[in-house]
Length: 471
Image (cartoon, rainbow, N blue to C red; front, top):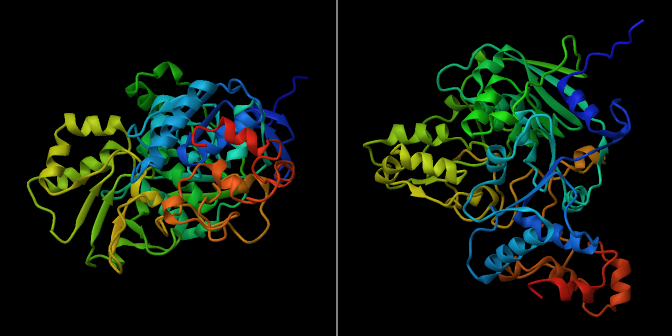
């Protein structure tokens, strides 16, 4: 008698193909092999120091990429010094380096390195955006990413698989953003806790790869471990447009596959939605806030990174002038998008209308400038609302105990409400990590510091100081 494997959904397929230890029962601890890693510059410095602490000569993962997209504002020498340090560290460890201005890590990685069927671990909460291409992508902290780059597997609790069946087609003026906002309207910011969201069904035919990027990116706002889409003709079309069609292959759930949790969304029934302050879960129809005066219109982020998002705005303002009360901010997600806007004449339309063109990067989404006036409405296409100039736009950690799987979906806030080191002056917020570490216990001996340090348990402070560019 021939043995037949049970039908797997897509998430189970990806997990099973990378499983090192554990099983597919929800809640069981599993270890997954890692194919790619992604770093942004905030945690990149820490990760590079951790690799040095572990004695790693070259990274032992298939592909590692470092993106400089957060700390772009150079009010002094500190950010520029950090960029030089990251560049030198990338050369040292064999990591791809994306210079400042190349764009936001998630869409750039999707354009250059995304490939169906691979696993990705990144030091950013919105790393699951890579699920738009059929990848299994997790956001993690610096230590987890450093271990993955050193060749270690990623440990987490096996999540539940939440199958979301999409039917129908999007009406006019309804976009992929409204799909994920509908999920947030239904379930709030904790609805995806301990779950992988897998989208499937006939409604996928009307969603491009970049549309899927929008939805997968903001699965983080649902608290989901990650999100994933099948690799189909839309994926093939995207990779072909990037000159990488050979990286494509079809990938989908087995016929008859089941899910731990079920959901269905009729795309044709959706209407334009918007999230009001101060939570991405505070979603209402746009018609409820229509007519309110705005101070700022901010277009472009990792949650709306496509050329089309900016091109539509350019078409709307062509031949017109933006009201002089409104700051019309354009944030291209990548150089590729910026070059296309220039080639198609869209950028000129935006400039003539009074738009403010910013460099390709995260910018105001993570609190690097573009703050609105006090008490004024800012209409933004960012994934979540930034709370302060020194905080990341990610959901706050929950107070209840968290499984390893969910704890990996959020990046630790460096400038948190209760930081693990004494609060620094604003001019010192970008000091290198080893200097922050050395200021924890300034009068402590090196031997005692080695035993108590939460960041470098096996590295003497003197060695940190001697190996760091800044020190």
